[in-house]
Amino acid sequence: MTTSKIIAISGSLRADSHNTLLLRAAQKFDPGSAEIEIYDGLREIPPYDQDLDNPEQRPAVVNDLRRRVLEADGLLIATPEFNYSIPGALKNAIDWLSTDFTGTEGQPLSRKPTAVMGAAPTNFGSVRAQLALRQVFVWTESDIVVKPEVVVFRSHERFDAEGNLTDETTIALLQDLLTALHRKIAVARAARVG
Image 1 (cartoon, rainbow, N blue to C red):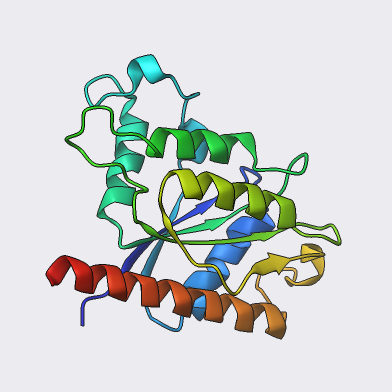
Image 2 (cartoon, rainbow, N blue to C red):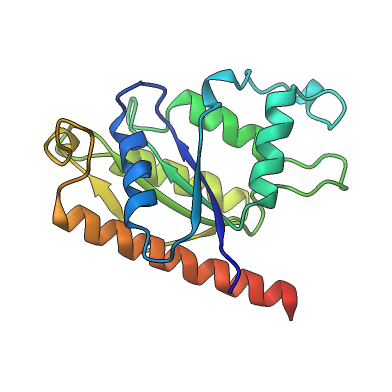
């Protein structure tokens, strides 16, 4: 069986981000043994500019991200919540990933099996950010995992001093989310072969 490749993006730029720690936990607890690569170039992505949105003019870091997502079997996003919505750096990256004006290179998010989760120190976690993100993925026609919803509220209580996810309920939900993502990846792979 072919190992799945999943690109994981944390919507937080903070060094000690609970969302980045959540992606590391996904690597550790993945029940499907996928190769989960955590993308670390979000800070370098420039503001979206439609005048530059073609393969020849896009910044190299943008073309690299687009290539990685196109080549991946799935996408895993962990988002914090800022001002009741998606952090600007994450939304900006999605804008760069959402187009194919040439009609030749492919739109990286189209039909891409995608799972969303998030962590925040508040009592509501990243509920509103995840809702906003799911709305964006309706437009891109991404194949979103609907359930389970992984909303890590009071996230500072769920990790130990070394950054390890220790909350058993969250670990179980994370594994269920990854299992659902693996199922979507398998369906997409079968459709390509068939």
